[in-house]
Amino acid sequence: MSHPTLEDDHTDHHIVGPKVYGLILLALMAMTALTTGIAFINLGVFSPIVAIGIACIKATLVILFFMHIKYSSRLMMLTVGAGFFTFLVLITMTLSDYMSRAWGLW
Amino acid sequence: MDSHTVAVRRDEETLHHEAEHPPYLRHHFETVEQQREAVSFGMWLFLLTEIMFFGGLFMAYLLYRNWYYEAFVSASNTLGIGLGTTNTAILILSSFTMAMGVYSAEMRNRRGLMLSLSLTIVLGLAFLGIKTIEYHEKFVEHHVPGATFSIEDFVHPKDSRDAALAPDMAQHAQLFFFLYFAMTGMHALHMIIGISILFALLWKAYQGNYINGHTATIDNFGLYWHFVDIVWIFLFPLLYLISRHPLH
Image (cartoon, rainbow over all chains, first blue to last red):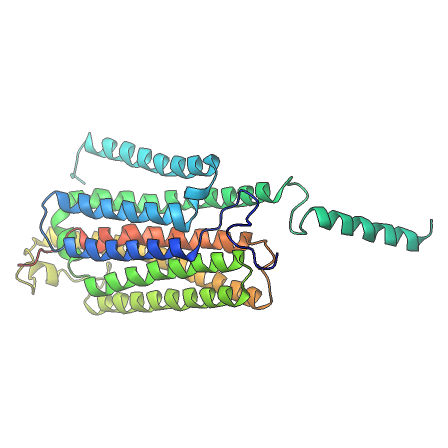
C-alpha cells in the first residue's frame, strides 16, 4: 500500500492525475492568450462579454478539475453552486437598486 | 489486575483499533471518506465567505466602471498588459504545480510533494515580484490615488489614442486606481499569506508529513491557492483587458 495507483483506489475518493492537470493547464494558458489577443480587437459591447465569458470558463475549469468538484459529492457541488448563485443574486439586487434611481448622479 | 496488565491491555486495544482505522481518523467520524468530505466542506464554506469578501470589491468596480467609463478606459490603458499577462500565466502555472503537489501527497511521494510546493513558492514570489514592479510604476507616474495623484496624464494624454478627459472626469481615474490597488492588494495579501503557509507545509513535508494517506492539509491549502488563482482570473480581464485600445 505504499504506492497506491489510480486503480486500487478502493474508496469513493477519486485521485486526479497529472494528465488531466496538464490538459487543464494547457487549456487555461490557451484561453489566457486568447483573451489577451481578443482585447486588442474592437468588439464594441461584446468586448466585456467575451472577456468575462472566457474568465468564467477558466474559473469553471479550475473549480471542476484543480479543485476536484467534478469528482465530488452532490453536497459539494451544491455548496459551491449555491455560493456563486448567492453572489450573483447580491450583484443583481444591488445593481437593480442603483439602476432604478439616480444612476450616475453621485 | 496489576498496573502492568492494564498497560498491556491498553496497548492491545490501541493496536486493534489502529488496524481497523488509520490513526488520523478522528473519533467523531465514522469513516475516512466522511472525514474527508467534512474537511473539504468546511474549507469550501470558508472560500464562499471569501467570494463575498472579494464580491463587494467587484460590485464597486462594476458600478464605477459604468458611471465613469471614460476615466476607467484611460486609467486601464496605463496598466502594462505584458506584465499583466505574464503574471496571469505565472499564477496559472503555480495552480498547476499546487495541483501536482496534491497528487504527489496522494501518491505518497515525498520528493514530488516537496518539489511541487517549492515550485509553487517560487512562482508565487515571481508573481509578487512583478506586482511590485507594476506598483512602483504607478508611484513614479503619480497614478496612486490620494495627495500625490496627478490628472496630467489624463487631461493631456501622451498617447494619441487616449481621449483627453475633462478635469472632473480625470479625477475619477483615482477611483479606478483605488479599486486597482484595493483588489490587487487584497489578492497580493492572500498570496503572501499563502506563500507563508507554503513554507510551513514544505518544512512539514520535509519532515515526512502528508504522505501517510492523510492529505487533508495539503488538499485544503490547494483549494485556497486555486481560489486565489480564480480571483486573479477575474481581476486580469476586468483591470487590464476590457477597456484596451484596439490595434490600428
